[in-house]
Length: 267
Image (cartoon, rainbow, N blue to C red; front, side, top):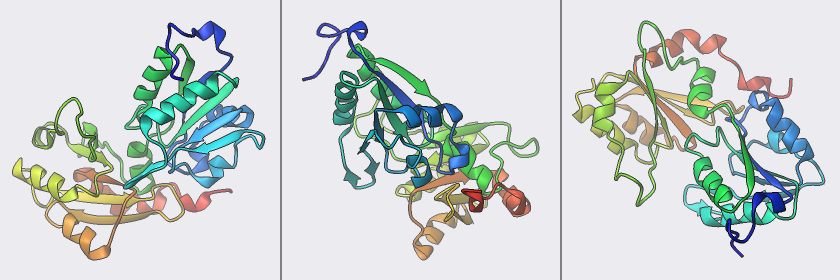
């Protein structure tokens, strides 16, 4: 049964839902508050990209539910996930919705919070380190730099159908910011690069694609706006990956040897 404010209010519901950001993968980047919540949770509903070391922090007595969505595969639909959180909060004190990165940065945390609030469920967000900042850093790329970029935009490259507007205005972004960080953009990379080139962004603009950022298997593919789509096809480079477009990418050659190391997991 779907709960509504008229059928149940927050005072009569025993539980609270915490929307917790798990960060990009490296357990060293997970927040202390998030860890403490996992250790005392009654129920944890997690995404597909939450790393194994973070999942290992979950209270052994907790009910653990994988609600992950990956390209072409959905274990649960979004309305069902929100309803699951509502149902679990009626029976349990601490329900953690564990989401990769930050819940409010392309994580649909806003949608889940709206549904919980409408149902009279107590809810709190615990921010996480978003991949758009951490992953370039782990590749040796600063998203801003005084010599190259005083502005950065975080953009989704994979938009849902029927959303508030039909598409990202790539041409406006090309002229409006100096660094573009694109989440979930590998599938539409041909279209994205074509739009940026049509907006007179220079073909030699550096591009970095960073796969499995902050994980031990992290890898980086470098190119330019003119070459990166062909490089992806030639190498078979696949998601999950972050794309960084702009002059800041050129610092990767100098900084890659002093970046934080995914190899340090568990040390």
